[in-house]
Length: 262
Image (cartoon, rainbow, N blue to C red):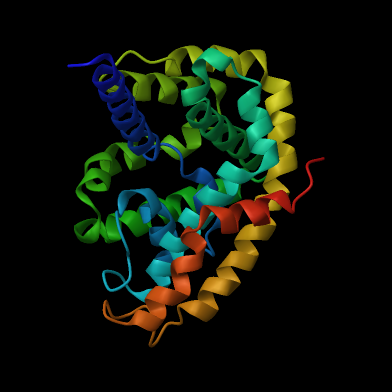
């Protein structure tokens, strides 16, 4: 094996490892998606399924669930491209930059949970309970990975635990242990703590923007994927073509850049 082959093999291994990390983080990083759902059972289910349901959802779920999945993915793309999120990632050590996005996702869920618990604890509890009920009632159609974690997610009330810094630290350590290679996720909890106030300010600047984006994107998806017709049949090319633009990273970067950081 040549030196170039070894470098290519190492790079492939790193990419596969990071892909596994992103899949694992999806099991703890969805509080924001719950908050951005429209409150209907189908929207809640779709927004939870955004990372778990692979491939195109059209034809596999009813249109309202498809809209939730598509909204989740659009919000992810918008978030990744947003200048405030990139600024937040830049606050963490450059040596850990490959994992910094995962840590910032977790930190932002923590800030959201803490705010929700402090300003409207009854509403926060009601939303969590409703989400757990929606998933439990539809257990049979959940992807296997979500089925495996649902009992612990619900019974240990993971979403509530994010409101506490220790809960976020525990989640990062749990993710770190689940990965096959040594990684800095557990150490990044210390970096979040060291930059806590600045990251909190980043979240406060970002959250209004993503809420506005989600409302507009939800309306767009409602037009593109109505409850009857498009979105309900796997061979419906009109529905397939209608939702394709939101998968474009350029499309999402353009929207994210239009928001000014405070």
